[in-house]
Amino acid sequence: MNKRILLIEDNAQNRYLANFLLESRGWEMVHAEDGPTGVALAAQVDPVLILLDIQLPGMDGYAVAHALRADPKLGAIPIVAVTSYAMAGDRERCLAAGCNGYIEKPIDPLTFADEVERYVKGAA
Image (spheres, rainbow, N blue to C red):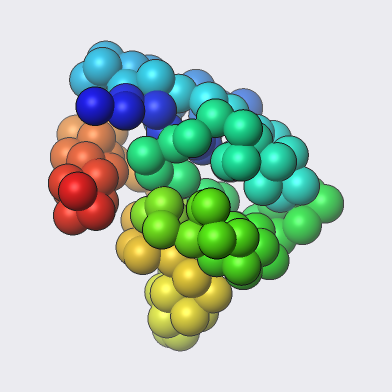
């Protein structure tokens, strides 16, 4: 089974924590620090899941989700927004942009890997 997750996140501390939590569960992590790089890497690395920050340099997460959904080769990959946007309507906006799920920051280290893995299992 493909165990590769693409994390599109510009904050080094957030990348480190997500990477640590998911690699400890056997996931192979690939990182992008901005939206355009994330879209390009998604086409190259064949991830089973994409974790997507919304507030990104170069191209925000909504635009990234739209770009990924527009590509026939990438359109079926589950995308989970991992974001600090937690106001009324933010979750719905992420889902409307093409995300399959939404995890609010700050992430909970005790539950994050389980939450992420549910999206992988749901796509299988």
